[in-house]
Length: 637
Image 1: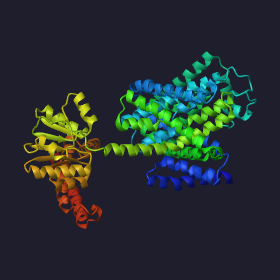
Image 2 (image 1 turned 90 degrees about the vertical axis):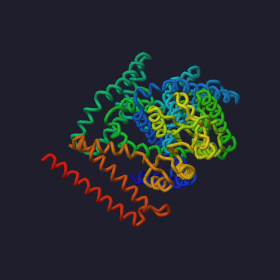
Image 3 (image 1 turned 120 degrees about the horizontal axis):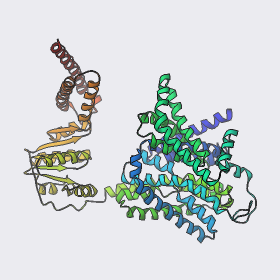
Image 4 (image 1 turned 30 degrees about the horizontal axis):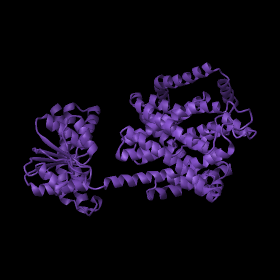
């Protein structure tokens, strides 16, 4: 027990110390976890042979992550991804496997071993990539969605790869490795037989596993489809009654226990029938994506997923065989870089073929260029089934670990490329051949809605945006827009700023928006300026710059949501509407008053006059609502 507590303290202390430092340096949490593992393993020697056992336990974090990702995808969304899953993901696997197999054969490896190497290295790291994409808010970009499609395809492909690998050893005599050496380590054979975790399973699980393995091919197929059908049926029909039953206990920890039971139970079932636990968990997540318990499951499992993934990354760093690395560092690092370069070139070509350009193309290329954690599983399985000799497997494990260690650096490279794309210099603007009474600067979600409404009402607009892709999408849907920087005076003059009646400022860059408002107000004092601001501070900046009507993001939607709450608390539609109107009018007046007290160089919380007046205005609002309620009571009487 003391040893377990000491090891747990070492792992947790390493994470607590290294990860915040890496995050503060802008390196991301993944690189922090990997560095922590290297520190407590090869450098200080605080952890040893138990790292592999911990790693197999920590791989459950990947299973949880895929379950949570599945919760974000409804079945219809998954069906919409089918072309990328089959086309983009399938092409990446086939081409990467073929290229890496060819390189292995060029170094005199038998084709069977070379094919096993190619299949192993073609996979990417689901854990590192998805964690980093989530941290950097890149999952919803086109590049992020394409990366996820390929990763999902790879996770699904692990199943047929595990079924196929033993066939590569079919012609090898029992006990003989592909290179002619004799004898397999019985421990490794048993480890692979029970799932590659090197641990002991209980008798019931072992009996079930033996039963499944002894079935004929058609029997295994039926059991497999039965397991998948069971997951779907339980998710659709049994989840709601079980959650209602748990709700009767009124114990918060029971929800957490149920969430863990769902993931652990599915993983156990998938392992028994020879399928990937990660795939089963993802499928269960998709089934439950439309249930009302989705957010409950996400909240309960998120902390476990984060800790287990962090532990997994630490074990990857701690498990790097530095003795082998120090024996031939140039060769192993060169092999890792070769894998990354070959996969990156293939991904770059596929990205162009699937119309991934700019930062999306670079994200797709750099995010998937490494080998992945499933590579460790495939290497162990290849050794146990006699496909791959030990000496090659040890080298391959180090190469896989090195590519995973390099991955955070690839994301840093992506950040640099993205910044360079942003700073690449002025774009060549379109020749603006029209002017109108309304100019819309910036056509994101906000600008699009304004433009559609104004045009539908019969008024002409001149739309300006500096993003070529945004303008291209507009034109595809039949809306005219001009490519150009809306803050440039020459472009504004060509758009008719001097004669325009209304300017809509919908730029994402806060400083650029303020500069545009100030310039437009100076050039055309009679211009009515409507702007979008993220918060009150930006409202004050826009107000001082000369904007007339300022729309705060989420303000109107928040008012509408508050009205829905009041209606469901017993107010009539009319009363809730009156309360909404009162709050709106009071807030508008308050913002104008506070704008006069706001000081750009002083935080509002440290501005005594601002704070005092804000408190007074809040009391006035409460009094106004009390008076409104009293009036309604009189009307009812």
